[in-house]
Image 1 (spheres, rainbow, N blue to C red):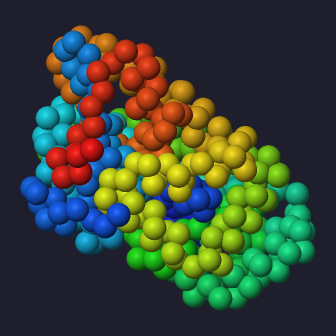
Image 2: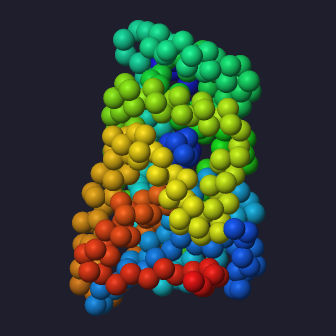
Image 3: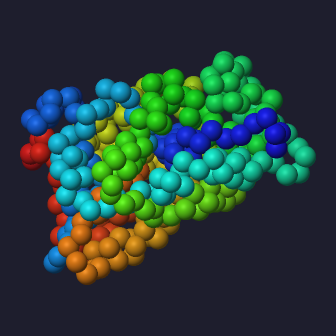
Length: 320
C-alpha cells in the first residue's frame, strides 16, 4: 500500500450499508414531531428488563433529523446502548488502516487482471465519470487497481450514496453514539471492526465479482433505488425494506446473504439474550442496520421465536 493513502475512518461506518444497498406509500405525519422518520423500533421484554431494537440507516441527510419522539423515549429509558461495533473502535484511525490492508492485493496484479471484459469496461467508465468524487475519498482510479474487487464495489456504492446526499457522519449510529457520550451512557458493540472487515474480505472470488458487478449495475441505474430505500426507511416500511434489500439478494446470492446477514444475526442473538437474562432492570437500546431486524431471518423474529414478548413501537405508523 502506498504511504500516501489511507482509508477514511467513515468508510467502516458505511461499509455494510453500502454493501446491502448495492444489492439491493406517502409519508404519514408524525403526531409527536411532524416530518420525523417513523422508526423501525421494537421492544423485546422478559420479566424484568427490555431491549429496544432500532433499525439504522447508516448514512442519512440533515432533513432526517430530529428523530421521532419514540426514539427519544427509548433512548431516555435505556441505561446503555449497543451498536454493531463499539463507537470508540469505529473512531480509531487504526481501523481504517486495517480495512485498507485487508483489501490490498498481495500478488502484484492489478484489479483489472481478474475482471471479465464487460465488468472491466463498466468499471473504467464509472471511474472516468466519478474521478472527482473518488478524490474526495482520497482515492484515484489508479490507486483502486491495488485493491480487491469487494473494496472496489464498496467504493462505488459509497460514492453513489454520497451523490444521493447521504452522509455517514449523519448516520443514525453516529448520531446516537454522540448522544450517548454526551449523556454519559455506556456503549458497547456486538462485534469488532476486525470481524466486520473479515465478513467482506472473506468473500470468495465469485462473490466479490458479483458484489462489484451489482454495485456498478446499481450505479448505472442512478440514484432512484437508493432514494427508494431511504424513503422506505423514513416511513418505517419494514416490508418494503425487506423486499428491496433482502429478497432478491437471498435468491440470487444466497451464500453472500448468509455471510453478511444470517450468520451475523445468529451470532448476535445469544448476546442479546444474555442482556435480557441478566439480573436487574437495566434496559438496552440496540442500534444495528435495518436489514438485521427484518424478515424471518431477522433478530426480531429470532427473539420472538424464543418466547420473548415483542412489540413494534411506532406511534405515527398507520394502524391496520
